[in-house]
Length: 407
Image (cartoon, rainbow, N blue to C red; front, side):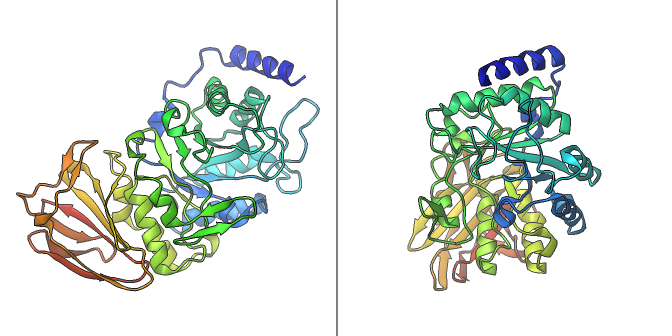
């Protein structure tokens, strides 16, 4: 019966949309890493219409929308436990009494875009109906609800080929004629960076993140990962990332219980790695410090730089990491991260360092002097003509923009 329904809805979709595919490619919507908010890290399945509307309001009033956080994405738990008689997904009537189109319209009215979640398996990770066998039918319903983003998970997928499953859903979304960003949330199990370009626009590279800085969190049958553990796993993947197709080291945990220094280091690393910036905190209850981190224009400019180059780890020694990222107009960003539990004093002599991006053929010009802008204090911090000496707090970070032009 499932195969019959799949064929039926595939034919209906193809007949209905025909050649109405959007002239705008989905990839063109994300020339820089997508930014937004997702419900999972804070709310898990405890989501409803009221929370979505309040979150949309808060994204606007906090300044996050204007800073670039435009995707509001509902994660697992939005649907009823059973499909209807025709096989359609049904929004939970208690959580979303006015349906998903009402919610999407409200989100859009705030100048935001709306995203949803499902799974490549027979069930989602929280045992709600998965999409296996209903790809075209579900895609058509998503388009009718006017969604802009689909996060597609990888639970309950025994015997399923990942590339084929994600390609099928990608094709189904494209057949709708509506540009819908497709987030491949396959946890890096089947190396999606090797086949994800052209299938989705971003792909998870690791297991789930947790609000810890440098360890793992026991989930019982698996471990979620810390900020630094995930960052360590990105160093060999940067060649796969770029405009329209992004490595995704998972959502941000800024504002979810780590220290102020840890939140800053987390945000700086995700920004210099050209990662999607998907906030996962309760934006209705943010502290001033959390807002200042998430809306830091100078660091967001590093993340959203039009070159779209993922930064690289240049040094990893004695608990100190140094990351570099080439930027437009010959500028560079640099990030010094202290993963130690004690403060660390550093000395960095620019004249003695050979900083070369061998993949993208950029190099720091040793014959030129760069001005340093401290991206946290937003103040001038000297030039590369002088050795950088500083003390970094435990789990702290320093971040600079290097520019040949006057700051």
